[in-house]
View 1: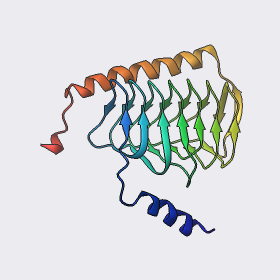
View 2: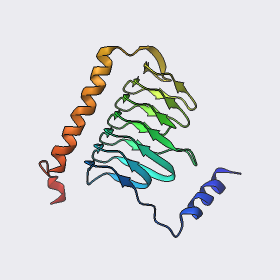
View 3: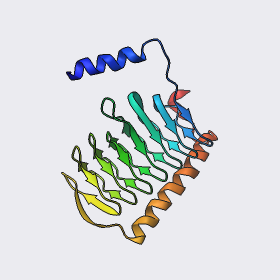
View 4: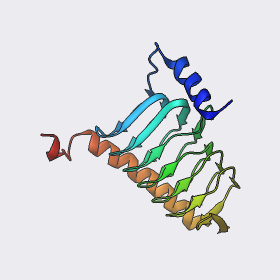
Length: 187
């Protein structure tokens, strides 16, 4: 069956019924973000400006304390669920179009995770890295380059950096949620 036919079948399956995203407690979603379709956001997650999370052709599950920074895109291949575990930081303009991101992982600015790849726990995918389709990155890996290659294991310092990013965006989401930084273009 060709891609066009599969997409049409998925589309026809959605016709006539609305699929609402759901979110946990204390979630911040910027007003310029798009979160639609079969998407679940975990507690204390933060979705910043111009993020697109499209659960239109497969479900997207996002764990607790995940931050998705400005301009990132989360989507997946037809019929392939995307699972993002707890305590993940997704950098600005990252494209997460894969199958799985493990807990306590950082996806760097502008990184691209392609179809069917799986990222383990406690990993760093460096800024600008492209992870090829179908690649599995084992737990505790630092990946850099195009195509992405494992360059070393994560250190305690790396894990502390991930923890700081996660905690920082919980606070940033709360502050943005209070309206402290209004967009003057919207007024």
